Structures are given as C-alpha cells and as structure tokens.
Image 1 (cartoon, helix red, strand yellow):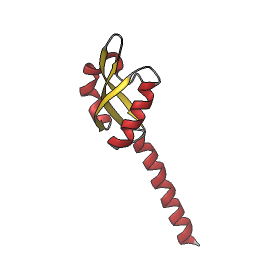
Image 2 (cartoon, helix red, strand yellow):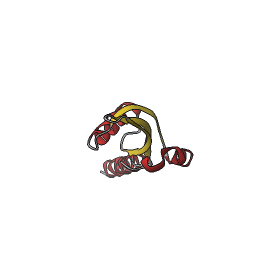
Image 3 (cartoon, helix red, strand yellow):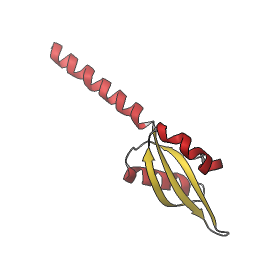
Image 4 (cartoon, helix red, strand yellow):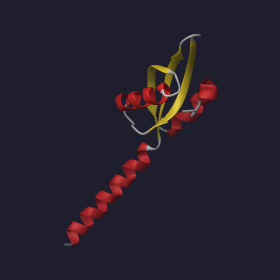
Length: 95
C-alpha cells in the first residue's frame, strides 16, 4: 500500500511540474491582415511547448482578432523574452 501511495504522489508531482512548465512557453510569429495589408511580428504565451500544437493555438487566437498567421518562427522559454520584446513592440504578449 505504501508503494501505491508513493507512486501516486510522484505522479501528482510530475503532472504539476508539467503544467507549470507548459505555462512558461512562448512563440514568436508573423501575421497579416488584409484590406489594407498590414503585417506584424509578435510574441505570445502558449500552452504547448512544441511548434506544431503552438502553431494551431497562435492561429486560432490571432484569427479571433482578424489576423492571419503567416508563420511561427520558434517556441521558447522565458529566457528568450527580453531579446524579442523590442521587435514585437505593441504585439509583445498582446494576444
């Protein structure tokens, strides 16, 4: 019984750690809006730390504001935020 409780405790700690890690993922992307044509580069916090799932999330969130995703450049952790802030301007963590 003690082994089962220990195993469950370890599993719970791992799942909590995974959720915290997922919250520290960001994607930088390029997007456009037509009529008139407007382009922007931005940084967005995402729940997925892999490029494929992050791309879907970014596209959905941008689409709800009338933007079309052109490309997800990369997915990164908090250590990459400062170097992208100036380039993203008003689209830094906007969506």
